[in-house]
Image (spheres, rainbow, N blue to C red):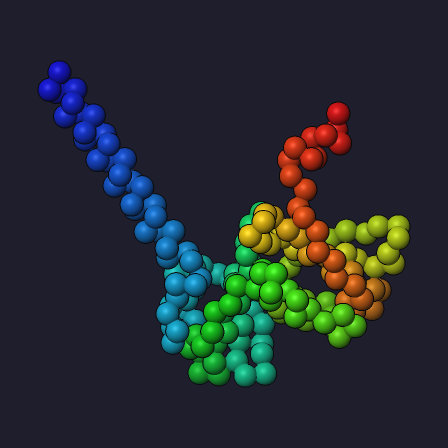
Length: 172
């Protein structure tokens, strides 16, 4: 019996070690934990290759998007000398209120929000609809940018993200 208890204790201990290692590894993949002043090389060694790189008037933006499966997009802005000066998670209802109808373009959306989770066309709109996923206190949400043929954002809509049980009810 004592051998079985020791074996169980070892298995539990090993399981805890695995959990701690996984959690610590996950921390290195968290853009919000990269210290200000880090260089691009340091950022990329921690987070991997960015999903987007954009030239800014006063530096460079490294973008790490978790779309389409995730609900976050992190913009890491580097100063002209290549050091991190700001990290911002932009898939947030408050941040998304900054989208300017008739002023934002396809390029503005890409620089600020990255590639959308979904691009659609519908009969009632003569252009693309870019959909991004984000999380709000009351649940999963989506923001839809309606771009005209020239690539200008003409409408912004917020909706709840369909739940799996909602989707299943349409198939029966």
